[in-house]
Amino acid sequence: MQRRFTLFVFAAMVAGVLAGFILHQTVTDPAQIKQVAEGLSIVTDVFLRLIKMIIAPLVFSTLVVGIAHMEDSAAIGRVGVKTIGWFIGASLVSLLIGLGMVHLLQPGVGLHLTVPAVTAKSDVTAQALTLKDFVTHVFPTSIVGAMAGNEILQIVVFSVFVGTAIAAVENRAPAVMALAEQVAQIMLKVTGYVMLFAPFAIFAALASTVATQGAGVLLGYAKFVGGFYLSLSLLWVLLIAVCFLAVGRRVLTLMGAMRDPAVLAFSTASSEAAYPRILEGLQAFGVSRRIASFVLPLGYSFNLDGSMMYCTFATLFIAQAYHVPLSIGQQLIMLLLLMVTSKGMAGVPRASLVVIAATLSTFHLPEAGLLLILAVDHLLDMGRSATNVVGNSVAATVIAKWERELGAGTL
Image (cartoon, rainbow, N blue to C red):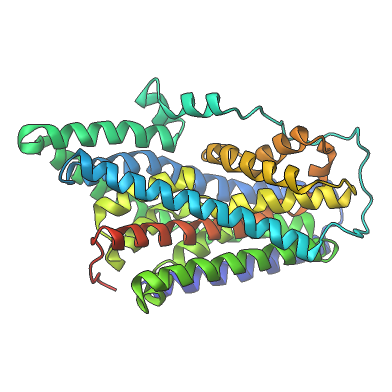
């Protein structure tokens, strides 16, 4: 069944690209192309809405059960410290690879594009992402509001409190535990139903993108797009190498288990779409449910490796395109700024662009530089999303190994 699903996904990707190419070549009226693309996007939007419908109850139920099964609050704190430590290290590595590669490849130097006027504006609002705003936003004023808005980090905070309280109660509230476990099982079953629509959503997403932009968009941005994907490849190699040091040859089995979630995230350009499949795949690989349920939701807020690399790469690409020199000191400050602001990405539409817009204004780079990357942002978002899947699955596996909670699995 798993192999058949993968074949359907790849077939949908190929068919989507071909259909989009044919539409782009045969329909010459931009208004008609836009109308067709909007029609196709309905399928993708419905699928992503169904995924978001699952996320909140799935995160809450699995995290509460996972934490409640931990021995005591010390175990929760120990796992939490290790997890955050890993995320900080992975974030620094991602940012530094992006910084090093953009200097090595120089994708913005000699760019033969019409650079927009400095007064030009993009449709992305540069929000002031302050530490105070981020910290206060972490704690929900209402769990109902957090679930309604799919605020993963707020749901995690509430779930940690509930799970810790259950663990502290005598007999561990068996009725509540049974309810949470049953909700988790039901939501995983719902996930199976929703995933039946994935190939159709993938077809629609790719057909819409290629129809509106055409395959030729890659030629003009070949150095930028190719350089970024090369940088992502290096990050993948590094993550897999670290995982190999932890679990040995089983890393190949892990990558096989993450194949479907990564392809799903890539083709829909959404990390959220892959969340249920990552959770299932990690447990099948042998990661204990309490570790997977604890690390994965946190990873969606703190460990977006592909997105962080993109912020560094794209910001310096814009600086190169405008011939704006940045000193080493400024670039290091930029890394620290991105280290903090990138942690607020989860749940924000076009979050990477929002963070880049804020960074551009901080370093007095023209906001119009965003117009240079908007044309290919969706194509790059596909790679970012797939990388986030790999980064979070490796993080959960390594943490499970440290905690001696990595079993043989069923794969």
